[in-house]
Image (cartoon, rainbow, N blue to C red):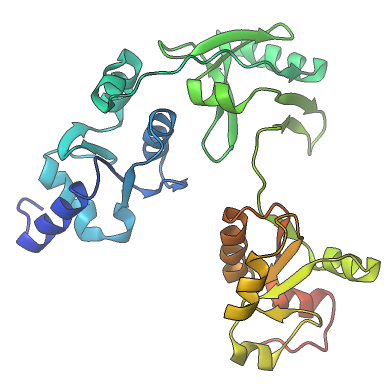
Length: 308
């Protein structure tokens, strides 16, 4: 694409004007779909609470057109107050130099190195990795969704360096704030590996096996079993005790105590996952999704429930 059609140019211009900080990226803020997009989301999440994102994967015209609009060949692209700032490399360099903070009018708060526990087994594994790769330190990264990764790296200008049980670590500022009290262990064996326990991680949707739901029912455990399918689907097949999520039940659920255990189900588990995440966002802390939905229930638990 060498020229932009007027409709595409207006669409992109409207996106650029939709907020003071706009990031054109692959994926969404909470679910980046490329490493470079995730890197810029991680930087912006450290600096500002609110900014707009445009998922170029949802619109091929915008995906190709933004490259012509900015005369920049790659994505992600950052705009601030209508002005194109740059792609991943430029924005990352600006962040490390403190220029991005100045541009956004952000005063960097003081962040201290985290304090966490490293077991002796984890120390041996990490020390071995550092030795084999001739590395300076273990880089721990915990992103805004509390997904943790570790690798061998050196410290950058904005990083914090420290030791835990004799192992050298480097973390970015966001990770430092998300990792106080972290516990790192290592389990030997074929199914072993590093185990990280983070007390800062917020509640998340737990995938529930059909057998676990049966156990809850037999125990007489108090919980809400929520069916998010349509009325037509419920007429075809139903799990005993499940209640259809209509407007009245939805309102009743939202008014229940936030520690009420909720179990959502649909046909195969996709729609119920989305519903579960919505209620998690409303402050509920014990939210489950029935893995495989009613179809898995029919196969694994009760064959009298029709499959469709």
